[in-house]
Length: 337
Image (tube, rainbow, N blue to C red):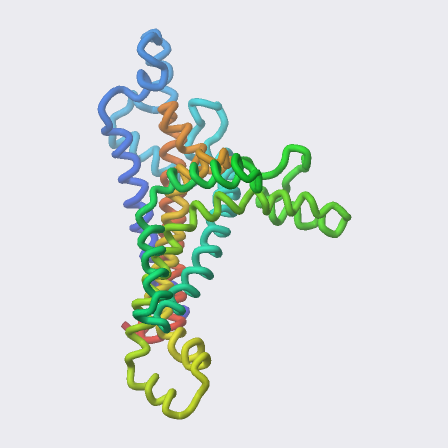
């Protein structure tokens, strides 16, 4: 197992080098002068040249690439043109908000998706199965921004059940330690102020549902297909003929084997949530890396855009590594291959 993990870790190195190289050349070879784009058409020639020198754009492309790779190896993505702060510091400040939102959305999607998939498979060709699959198709087809806007209109503006945006009610000011608000506010439960935690949780519900709806639908469909395949196997018939309770057959024997493709889907969807949270964060005014990246693209803040894309891509690659390891734990034959 250790050898398998080491081999997979070694494979990460060329993958990450490829990601950084691709991001660098995509930005560097984009049409137009980045310095002029960032400063605007009315900027003086001296100001543009000074910015070009600051960004290293006056050097040959290969030299720029070498210097950029050296900086990235030390997690130095330069300074944001918009704020003047180090890009890495801005990412550190905002990334916990995105991770927290993505984890909550994934928990919602995974639990409900697997449950719906199992029920749908065990009730095959009934109205329950039909309703579940129509709902899943509806979930996959809905644009995230449309769903988010509808949820705000119905549950926030219409019924006044949830806030329209933000991470916590502004009345509950506190100094975050980890920037994971659920963790930071959890301690207030024991000091007689549970409203801090409940407010943070309250603000997470709508964005989590909006972000998790598409993964939920995909997980439900994958679980159903996988369960139907497993339930046809001879060993399931043998277990049933032994008189074992049906719920035990489903959840003890069938579901475990049916989870193999579901684990892969969950990993891929979690990676996509990190990169796809831009719309959700923007609509719900969620101060995560997605909203920050959107603002950086709007402002032509190239160092911030490069840094944000590289960090998100790296997370995606690491999540795939975790999925591969989990896959090999569930099915040891993978390691031998």
